[in-house]
Image (cartoon, rainbow, N blue to C red):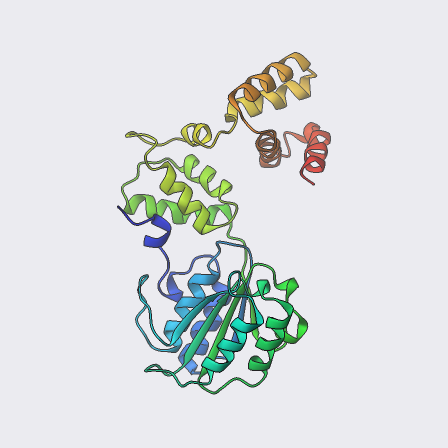
Length: 296
């Protein structure tokens, strides 16, 4: 069984990270100057590189080669979603006092740290206040607002940005070419759009779509596979709205409903079409307001 593309093409050095130069530049200088911190907080949307950078940073600090399957006794990963009790953190506090086995530092990567219980957070805080010289903590979260100020004040915080659709599409093109996946640019743009700024989700979608056809994969094929309305149908709806053609609107929506296209997908597609050509579709702005209200 082949390896999933998102795992195969996971970044293995800071220079390979796409879309977060404001973070990688600082970390590269800190590593080069030997001025790394004892605690980091990586925060931002899912799928934008937090876990990848955490692992890369851990290996760089310890001057270890990083391979996707590599494990090391002095780099410990903890999923706070399933290890969130005060007992789990107290166990960590005891183990963190033990010196590294062979590397310069013992590094703890705690993912989804906002999932820790209140008592667990308080226990972790004591360790962050007075960490052993050999310990480094790399915390990652999609929801930093749930963390207390006492934690935030004791870490170096890095805010990850949502990756732009064009950046994601360009990265997908690199992977598609390397994997000899024949797919056109419009299809890649569509995949990037529905990946919603997440590299991981977008690459997983590309992996899913790679077997759609033995010929070049088109945007229409991707739309059909994702259960979306076609671009032609969306434009037909907008033209009918502008013309006040209620019959065409009803017929088109009935056909989409028969195919099982979800209402929220039609909503999103209509909004995207209006936004993509707002100057020529200014008469659709009242509709856009209603569609936005439906999303709330």
